[in-house]
Length: 472
Picture 1 (tube, one colour):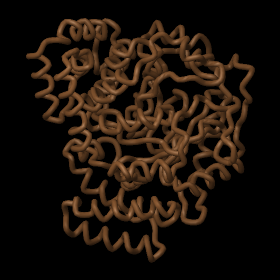
Picture 2 (spheres, helix red, strand yellow):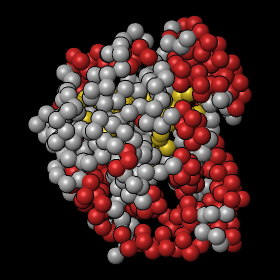
Picture 3 (tube, one colour):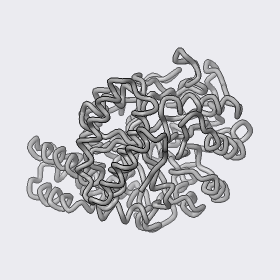
C-alpha cells in the first residue's frame, strides 16, 4: 500500500504505485491537453508529484518537450539565478565489505589496491584542495566497520576543519557514507557536517537485491529508510540520488520523486540536493554489462523534469560527465558541480592522476581553474559560498527562504565575495580578469542598494585588504 507518510520503505516507495504511475504516463504521453495542464501547474514553481512529472518525462510531442526544457531553464534561473556552486570529492578509504556489482570497491575485487588515508595524509590532501581554491568537500568512504568506523570518519572531519593553509579553509564538509544508525547520524551532526548524502542506487527492490548480493548494504529497507534516521539524528539537510542505468530510468525517476515527497510529508523539508550520476566504466566494471544505461538525450530530459518537479532542490552533476554533457545540463537545472576532481584515495597529492584506486572514470579532467574560466565564459557565477549552513539557514529555514525565492538576497552577494576570494588567491591571470568583469556585471543584479554598498566594500577588503570570509 502506498503511503508517503509511512516510515516503511516499501510503503513510501511503493512498487505498485510506481508501475501504475508509469502506465498512466504511457497512456498520456501524447495527451496534449493533460500535458498543457501539467506544464501550467509547473509554472507556478511549486513542483509536481511523481505521477505528473512521469507524464512529462514520457512525453513524445516535440514541441511540448521544447516547452519542458524551456521551463526547466526558467525555473532554475528563478530559484538559483546564474550561480553554480563548486565542490570536490575527497576519498578517505576504499576498504568495503559490500559486493555491489557496479562498484570497483566491491569486496571480491582483488585487482584494486586498498588504501586508507592517515590523518596526516588527509591533511596533505586538504592542503592540496585548499591550494586549488576549494572551500566545500564531499567526504567519501567505503563501508567497512573495521577499517572505516564512525570514529575514523569523525576524526577525519575534525582534521579537515582544523586545517588553515595560507588563505585556505574548508568551510563545509558534506558526507557520503553508508547508511548508519540514528546515534551515528547524531555524531555526524555534532561534528558539523553540511549535507548527508546517500545514493539509493536503485529503487527497484528486486533489482536492488541482485545488485547488492552481500554485505550490510544488501538490506533494502535499512538503506532506503536512512534519510529518516539521519533527520531523526538532527541532520537538517540530506541529499538523494540514484545511479541511472542500474534499472529502467523511468522507474528510478518516479521512485526518486516519491522519496522527495516522503521527506517533505514526514519531516516538512524535502531533499537539499538531488544528484544524477549514471553508470560509467571503472576498474573491473564494464558499462556494457548494464542494459539500462541511458543516452545523453534521456539524461538531459531527466535533469529537466527533476528541476520542474522539485524546483527548490540543489541539483548536482559530477565529473563522471563530459564537459559537453555538463554544459548542456547546466542550462536545464544543475546548480552544483565538482571541479578538478580525483576519485582515487589520496589522488590530490599525486602529480600524475592515479588510476589504481579510482571509484569511477572521470570524463571531465580539467583543473579547477579551467572549470571556473569555462563557467565565467558562459556568464555563470562560480560560487564557493557556504554561508547558509554556517548561519543556521538549513533544513526548513533554508527551504522556506528558497521556496519564497528570498534566498537570492543572500546568495548572489555571497557568491560574488567567494569568487573574489578565489580570483585574488588562486586564479590564473586570464581567469582573474574575466572574473573581475563578471563580478562588475552582476553587482547591479543585487536588488537591495544597502546590500550592494556593503558588498562593494567587502569586495575591496578581500581584493586589497587581505580580509576573508564575509557573508550575509
